[in-house]
Amino acid sequence: MQVIVLGTLALDTIETVYGRRENILGGSAVFAACAACYLAPTGIIGIVGSDFPEAAWRLLASLEIDTTGIRTCPGRTFHWEGRYRENMMDRDTLCTELGVFAQHQAVAPEQYRGAECLVLGNISPVQQLAVLDSMQEPEFVVADTMNFYIQGERSALEQLIPRCDLFVVNDEEARMLTDETSLTGAARRLLERGPGAVVIKRGEHGASLHTREDTFYVPAVPLEIVRDPTGAGDAFLGGLAGYVARSGRVTPDILRQALVVGSALASFAVEDSSVERLVGLDRRELLERCTAIRMLTGFSSIEI
Ligand code: AMP
Image (cartoon, rainbow, N blue to C red; front, side):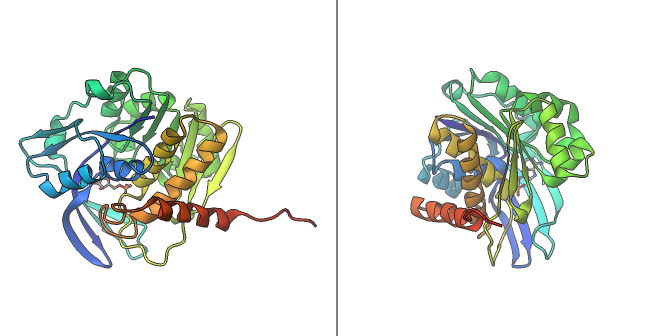
């Protein structure tokens, strides 16, 4: 299956305990595509300004990511500034400048419309719906969202949720969307709205998959050093969708494996700034990390 990723292409300024990096390549579509491309042919739908650096185009080309769905317009590329607290989990958004994004009317270009796997990364749910409507009949639609859109564009988001095969949120967003305190309760409420499955990302505590029949947990890879957590959620999403696309079908077992692959790719994303660690990753490293996750959770049967 081909993977098409909708989301932001951004120039981020990030502050962590390790220092400040200005205008580095980021955005939900970039992180997701840089993860998905290891598993399946991947294309991006998005928009950038005339300041989008030549090196970023080269980087996407080096990963064989199809960029024909990225429009370039006069003006500035989407810019996000964030500062991480000392625990490297909580962060404050210091500024979000939409730039050319404000004028983006996203639709899938002709050559992407038949793609089987659609990743609706973090972006306005109005745009997520417009792209979904412009596709022919994707077999696997996965969408992510964030507090920014839960607060600002709730009704479009509520229209999107039932149309997803898999709806992905983090713990805080799951609670915001459902007013439940328990995440198991929140997952059940979200499933009642009609998506095929729900994933709740729990930061360094991993992620859980919820369907009507099944619940599954995957831990996050325990890392001693996290240099920059930006993009972990997007890399998780792209990796998960890429694995489903590579498998060519969606079964309960493949969804479980996809969560493991997403978790492995997210762990690479946070080991360095921007997509630096994702670029140049080889399949062997990826497979080793998936095996490490398996070792973390596997045990023989217990007799009492
Ligand atoms: P994550 O850490 O997975 O939440 O993703 C962070 C990335 O999302 C950064 O590279 C940002 O450029 C991008 N981003 C931040 N705010 C938004 C927003 N409101 N809409 C879409 N993308 C955003």
